[in-house]
Length: 88
Image (cartoon, rainbow, N blue to C red; front, side, top):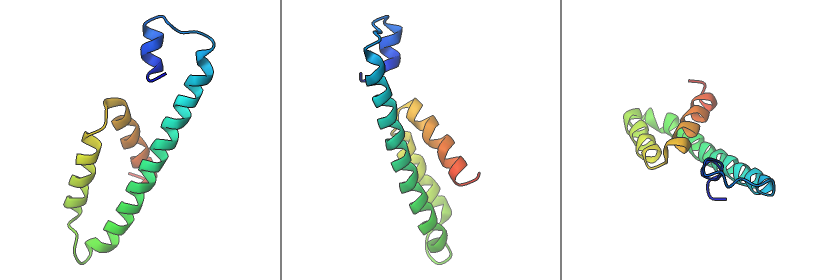
């Protein structure tokens, strides 16, 4: 399903949906992991580059713009995982 929470709320939940939902969450998790890895790599490059060239504020602004494009749930997930990954 495109959104299992909406299905559940609409009362159209069936046991047969469980597998599809598991797949949906797995895909979402894999997508999040990819996003985090991309941001992590960008963060590391920025730390090295910032000594000479890149203003850390520019990096933060770039991350904020990217995160702002996400829906609310994704944004919260990404921010939570990113902070954990970067030990903030």
